[in-house]
Image (cartoon, rainbow over all chains, first blue to last red; front, side, top):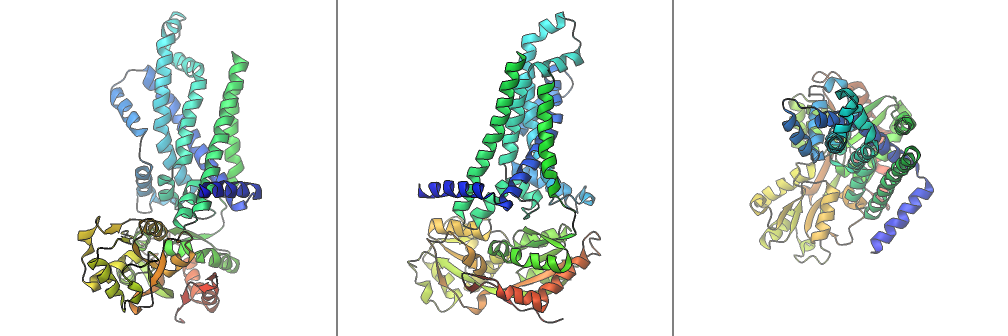
Length: 234
Length: 275
């Protein structure tokens, strides 16, 4: 238990000191994961809604794939993105390997299936509930998709932040494509892995405490925004 | 009505904008190095001085020697700093590297449980140590990751005449991980382990481990630096990479290496030959 209390003290100490290295690492973690979630949302929300509302060839397979890809192993995604972005890979000329952009790309692959699959479920449930009403009001398909996305917006925010939780917590993909370069691609999770490997167990655990606190802050900010909005508009 | 969504998007955009200034565009080279050097903190000590002198930043990717060489083959790095001579010579002779330059050395040590049940501290050679471990089936933790340290360990088992592969999973444990992680595991298992002295000295979680055997000439650990061949990978920054090599081998670079200490102990010994 001593280790844990030490780690908490250390975490508080690091936060109070506003250690510039720590701030840089936290900022990069947020930058990479929020950007990835934003892009994944732009793809995943319409994709999920379309899968819920339209019938087309291969839809069943796509749904099965999405559900499977919700549990993609980050290290495999990292490896695939690495091979694509390597100088000897198809997109090597872009020189993106070992940059924050590469880390965003890998996380988009991890997060998009989660947002799309959860959105499909949310929109499908809403559609079951409102379909008859919307039809009776004369809604056409594209309108219906917009209406349903709008009506389920509060649940969708939760879906998007399930994706954020995945992105901010993973280490396998960002370690491979980012390289954990100090002042450049080092994020919270790769720092924790590095400090553990240096035997700085206490510091590693302290960083873990800070990472979880960070997730808590982001999630509660979104939840309270959601709550406030809900009160305002209903 | 749309206010809420707009706010959510604005929040994210703000987050991105606040942090996007981080990726500055100053000149840099990428150096692939070993976990042993990264964990020691040597490069964090050297690079700021090099940057002062040249304005070039050095971005360090820390992997095992095997993977560092691979990153060189695929052109994903400009420079490699590694420690396994036969692989390095093969790398240069195949045309992936321009030249191999020795810059510094230290040595390997064998650590294990402080009570040292096999008395390897009394052994007269590293072959004898390994033979004892094999004979008594004592737990031994190996990197198992094609790193320089792992390749060295395999050579030593070869000299001791022990084929460890057949014992993998019984008393011989392959972690497939970096030196620090492997030391953590050896610590947890009360096992013997081969480590480079730099990582050993800078490793913090070693209260269950003790340095038991050292100073055999076979445990010499030479580090060399190799620039990636720009003829193979035209995008690599050979000129800047060579500046770093030359600085590391210069009297200033060599003195910096010698003056890097941890708790009063020198971790690396410069031995670059003048050009």
